[in-house]
Length: 440
Image 1 (cartoon, rainbow, N blue to C red):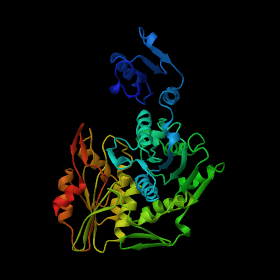
Image 2: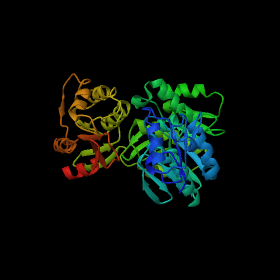
Image 3: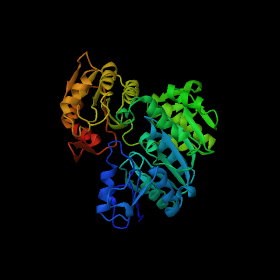
């Protein structure tokens, strides 16, 4: 166990604590908590409180100092692994699962860091964040290398990039899927959000590696143009022959067992990446991603699908994909998370009203917000008023399932693989898949 810590809750006597700057200015409180728990040293950008001078080191850049300490004390386990990254608002998880499957089919022992779960070989563990904290990443990489893994595939979030969590990782390749409205509660503006994503493609992280960029969206096209100085591949579906099949999609001569236009964009990136890396792509014929356009129930000409879509763009892509396999009405159950970006709520409502025939507005993870107020915010983008309100997600799923007729498709969106719901500050067990199966 490393004596380096950046989470005051995990500090024990003798640890060195790095007081990473927080947007709410709480780093001083965390540092004081670490001192109370017996930390031997505090590294902070703030001056030492009176009486703590002998245990306090004030530095200009805490994040970079943490990196130097980690490299010195823990070595660099990432140098023992071929590291592959994928970033974007949507599609990260699907791309990461496809990359992992392709590498495994090539006989490689892989480690995977994803929103759904983490893997070291066959060993699965729960994922608490899309991209773990800096020191947790070091520990994971060291464990993966020790287990004999040679490849590490990881989703890289904009938060992780902005906070320096992936500092010092030498990526062999990096993929950019797209950028759309999300996380503005953290980044403030789309420009800040874009600049955070762009950090993955700098020489500090990608080095001599290759960038694979979806140029069919405006931000991807911009990124490709701004990376004129490095080896990069722009990928577009405009030159591809795409077919919808009973089992998914076909891109040129490659069968992919995923549905939807959004997965065409994800898969085309992966196919180009695999070709460049000289890897086989047969694994795409049987690929599946939990909670990503997952067909949970299919009977009597009716289907129920669970998808993680929780942004306006993702919801639009999912509903368009569902419409293509729907011969009756398209139904959707969705909500928006509490204590998160409120500006996307009416946009999601507008998308649902435009694309679905029947809509149930419900709770996602309301957290400490009033669920009814969240629904009010979503309704602001739904002037046609053709929806039902049901804040109880279990009841909403049950009502929507009961309304299915022959040829209909029901999409339950927002939570995907998650098996919990956060009500107030309490996390309770809740699975959209379980609720759907129990409703029929």
